[in-house]
Image (cartoon, rainbow, N blue to C red; front, side):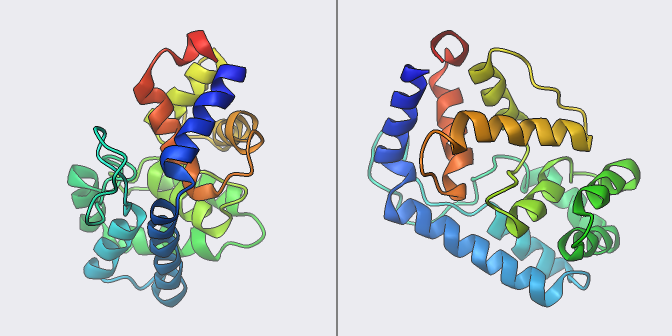
Length: 210
């Protein structure tokens, strides 16, 4: 675990705890929340496209340098909100409006709403990314965005494969693993978590050195 602490500390010092990195993500998330507050349930196709852009906005350095890029990119969560997934969601704007509003406005039983989403949603392309992004935007200190590459990183750290079926219990196990291996190790900001997991996975050999 000491080696894991060292590597997380290095990633934070080099990139994830720095001002430009955090500010870009904080700003994008704030704008996404404002859009949800104003328009959830009534998105136009353009609103949804803008929301998906905000979900994916980041400012990070190229892999060969610690210097930050000159402009923000739409690469934070890899393919979750771009490409085919994006096109499929934009084609189902009515269903997206229904579930985005339900998830964003649910106050008493948002996990029950998440369970209903996975049981009955007809939104192709949404996967685990869209609904857990909305829960993360609501409660960033409690929930994390759930995607396959992030779960793979946590499985490597934990030395066991985390379950990945689209169920609330498996999502809660994922969040528990985030808490155990990332949140509780440092006074970390929510916007750092997915980048740290991404970098740990990219470095390889997590299971052997954690």
